[in-house]
Length: 376
Image (cartoon, rainbow, N blue to C red; front, side, top):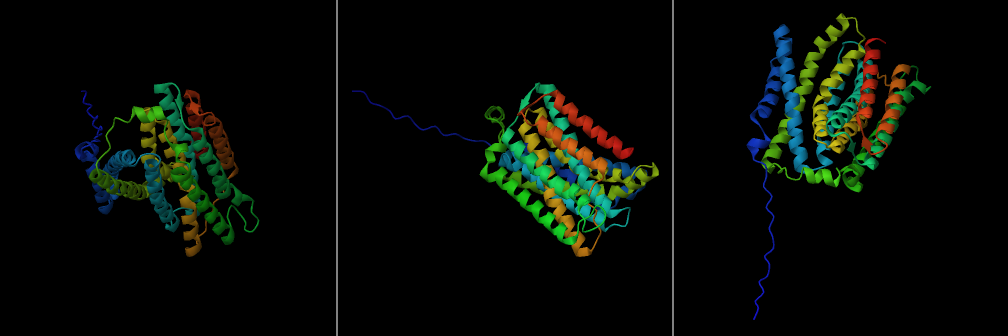
């Protein structure tokens, strides 16, 4: 008589990453140092204080990138990249509003220049750097075409409505919107961004997920524990607050240096946008180097959409409530560069695969933007 022994079901045990590995000590110290530096006005303590504030700023940026990666690994794509995009943009709004309320320079123009600079940095520098870095190491990289096409379509619509259309309305003079038009554009921006987030996270989440092969390649990395993820989220917020507040504290010094060098005031907006977007830039670059181009593009285009979809409505509300002037329309040079950037991005991301050529192309356009900003 043969006795059959039932096969015992296999139990898969998923180990979580130890907290000491997920959260190095320096990533916990840097955000606190940033807040202390802001509290004691380190950037105002002469040249040495300014240099120390810059070092703390860089450390806070690196800490923000690490904590964002911990959260992204825990919650998965595309929610992880969405966390950093929204967090940075919400903090960026506070920085732009503070610029609008300041008496330094043309506050209305600084708000517009900062938003435009953020879009150009994301669309050309971050995407170009990721495409180039990934292609140099992996030759050719692939991504999901449907998700990027959707993101570029929404970005083109919001960019034109927010930064180009104000130049051609006749209700007011100059590159401005009438109050009713400003309310309309703010609502449209929120609707477009909200719809995109719904599509990205619920309805068509698969459009923004890495390929199956890419997910399997990184499946061996154990996720962090719940405790580590909670601490990382708190430290991410602290690091982002440190980055923006330090950037705001350093902005008078930067503005004085820019004006002292005889450069246009628009350069201040470029510098501030670059500082605020530094965490996303580093996170996207590291993802591309690891052959996770889908994650890099999710970060880049998601941040660009959040910059317009959240910033423009917030700035519009502040402008209407406090009766502050707000110039949104960019000049002819800016419109040309924006149109070129959107057109090239559509071509570069229109095949689902990228090489070194696309990366170099985007970086050249960004170089042209920087050069014509310094030498208008």
